[in-house]
Length: 199
Image 1 (cartoon, rainbow, N blue to C red):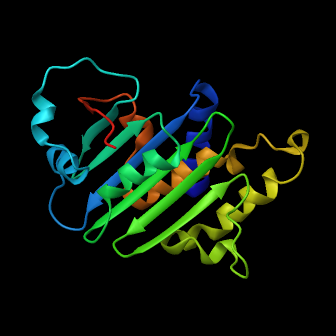
Image 2 (spheres, helix red, strand yellow):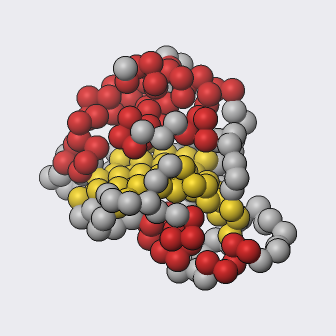
């Protein structure tokens, strides 16, 4: 199951021409989280959704998907993640994936008070703490992540194009299997709401 999903996303990534990819999925433990709810959690006035404005390249896109909200942006840097992290917290499950033009990738998950994070192509380094102890609710996928790290270590000419160890394919597969959200389908669906990226 995991292999099939990861291969599907790896093939999608291979065909795309992204320079930066950032997406989040946020689901409430109970009830429904609307786009308006998400905008308020970001610290914005929900009235901005109804304001006529020209879409700017740095805008944050919000999309209602079932009981939760998916966001898309082109800011894979810490200031952008700090903003979308506001969507998580107690009573929510939240996943963040950011990938920049140089291939640096961050996968973060927060399930209420439990959270964890991975970075590729190399894991975060903390003294005396293995990366497997830093991934919190993502721990069930530790073997999948280890395979990616093993394959992408060393010099670039040794890196594999095997879709089963694609960094983004693996991360997107984890988000789908944990959240139930088919991000490959949602990429082409609407409607979407655009708001200025909060500061």
